[in-house]
Image (tube, protein in one colour):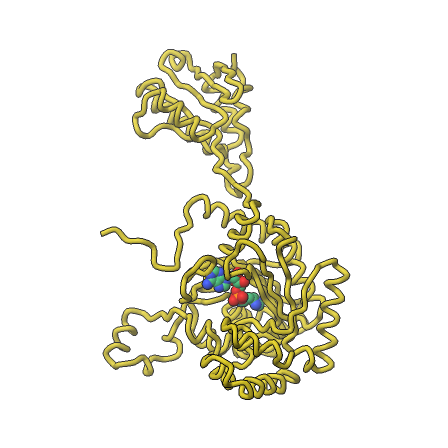
Length: 462
Ligand code: HAM
């Protein structure tokens, strides 16, 4: 029986994998200019890292986490009827997002020392949420995220938002069809009273609202702003707005963030109902949505400030903020806009063999070319010369080197430029000497250190 990838997951085939890699490279380059360094945390964490950090009452934790058990602990829980006897460190979950794990790592390794500059970290990798799969909603998806810990200043908020918007712009996300929503969620000072007023509002309108929202009144009343039920949405239009309940400090912080965005020419829409689905947020929250071609999953990225999260994860009080963008959703936005940049596989040359007697020399030349950083292919299937040329054409190579027994007897090979059809006889030893000059330049990647065209000028070319 043949199997498919699990529901809600997708294989990243070479073209998509190339795009993922080049997107992560672009992010590393851009975020690097803002001082960000890479961090990799485990794909699974002790479940408490998520339940405490993201919040037990959120959908992400309450409904969507993939639970992980070692085989041994799984069997034990089965035998005992439940897993209540497992220790906290034996209860693991796949990460539904990156922030909680990064903050756990920052606390564990004391990455924000007292008086030190903020820790600026970015990550890229798969996240896992057991949601109902649909267009733009996967169970394993890929995020690129950034977290900055150690600053309460509004400049840090503005910098984070600007960095995200610059990245989207650079990747070709159509800015005219994209909107940036921002809001302030307040802090411990002003949010509890606001939360209570929303709770009261929901209870006052209980009869008009869905069962889930009625339940949310006590567990997580602000989530009612995100309810997809039309009746609830209508009721919530008149619910109290956080922006009318911010304390002076939060209001001032929010005003400063907006002023900085204005000064930077970043357009935004204030949305007092933007509450986001994770409980750790305080003050600034933001979301980037693409308004065309996305179906119901229009958010390509989002984030905000989380000044209490480090303490929740067991660390010293350390303010922080960050964002994550969804790679698959960004690709959907680029496809819809027709701006998805193709990054085709680069194949420099093909070494064709006239007959099997020259294969060993061809193989030797292929190895020398690869050591010089060129992407060169040869036939491994015993194809005819005609088929080898077809293959070279299909690969889109610039140069084909034809090795035949007669030329080889004189130490020569024929080099053909596939676009101009110009041909030259090249001395194989000279070509190898030329390639050898570039050997060892490979590690570090990037552009080929030698151009395949240089073979035309190899000493001894006729
Ligand atoms: P989030 O809004 O839950 O925030 O996710 C960020 C982005 O990940 C979304 O805007 C979306 O593009 C993508 N995404 C989320 N769920 C899925 C899914 N099931 N399938 C495909 N794409 C998805 C966070 O994760 C926070 N950790 C962001 C953050 C960082 N806040 C502070 N720092």
